[in-house]
Amino acid sequence: MEDAQEESLNSSPSSPLVYTPASFSGITNSALLNILHQLRDASEFLENLEDPVPEDVFFSFGIKRARIEDNLFRLRPTVDGGPIQDRLSAIEQCCRVSALLYIQTALTKVNCKVYHGLVETLRHGIEQVGQESIQAEYPDLLLWMLLVGGGAAPFNIDRLWYMRAVKKNLYTDSWVEVEQRLEGWPWRPKYCVPWRATWREATQLYEKM
Image 1: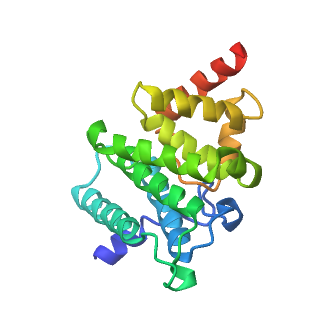
Image 2 (image 1 turned 60 degrees about the horizontal axis):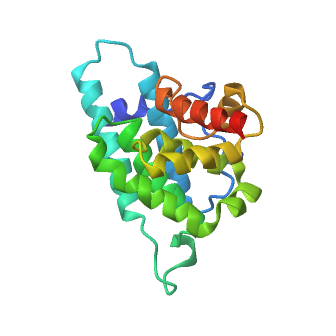
């Protein structure tokens, strides 16, 4: 019964939110790719839910979400001596942190103090790799990570950093551009108020520059 319920959480082939490999440019670790796929499925499932939600369906989703999060916690950077296929690049580590943050904001309602540490960790990770470097090779991955972090950032220096980073990443001041570039990445159109706020603040900074 539980397996059948979990199967219902998977994306249909015709879904506009369905996973497309090309969308995950910059990610080669197979375990992380699989997790991103699962986050897409979970996002679509929540988008299609209608109230009232049956208790067994809500429970099954909670189990799936917890399993995804547990897999992310297990997916830690390995030492140089570990198998090559198990290693996370610096960019993939940023993506892993973003995925954890996404679960705690877009897929779960938790106290903001719980995930503020991840906001700062993600920022430092992007800074370490180099925002310009990621922008040059994987601009859409960077946009997704910045919106995940910016949407969760408190009103402090971290939030200002994310707004400025989003500003540098955008090609236009249109939200349509953002939606098009988010295709293939985990996101929920119904959960986009924090992301739109970050985008709006970023475009206002752009207009002032």
